[in-house]
Length: 86
Length: 161
Image (cartoon, rainbow over all chains, first blue to last red; front, side, top):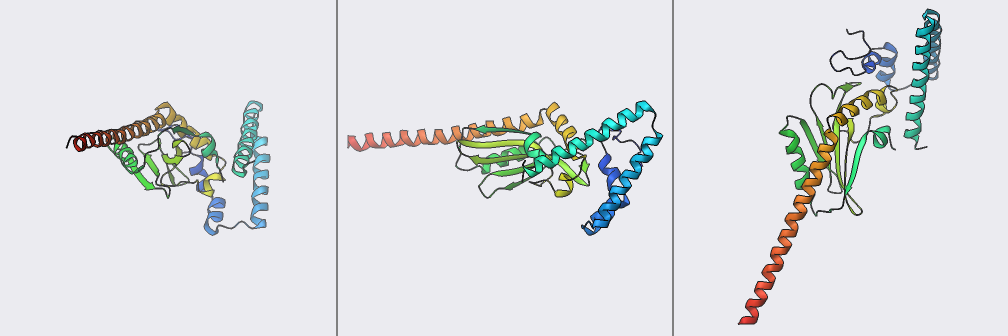
């Protein structure tokens, strides 16, 4: 399986393929329901991964990772705002 | 409920022509892209308009298993005909929830929209519809002129007897 975040032929971002293969994503998609515990578990998972990532990164890489995660959060907020009609 | 595709990844134009029947226009659009080896799909709207999806090649990739496409809408609007061409999911008029909630969807669909714009595929679709609207409007006007000419000729014949 390709490890790159980008499709080698088209250059398009292929993170949806990476996400679709996650057991966490597949479980939610399988039953279509999100329990409060699943939601809390996912939030904890992200928290743990961010702690791990921060500890692994050299300063320059940490700057880029911080920018990437922050701008991704902004994009998510923008999408939510458009969808809500606000 | 609007999604980001409605707002940001679409070319829209209102053409000041209102044909009685949009049927032939949609058929012509399907054929135009079919001849260029696009996979095409079209359905009529309740208003008599059209919803047409086309895709071809690798850059209309799937996202979360759903094939992307250029979706073309032709519909009546006050003052004329609304034509829009934008990136979306093949044969779907609205984004599925799984796409709207997927944080990377705007990134992927935005990239595909960029390729569409670079190749001017959206402009090609809109211009073709504009051409067809003008053609069928002209054809109808020709018919009206012919009918008026015939009426005048018949009136002259009637006056001469």
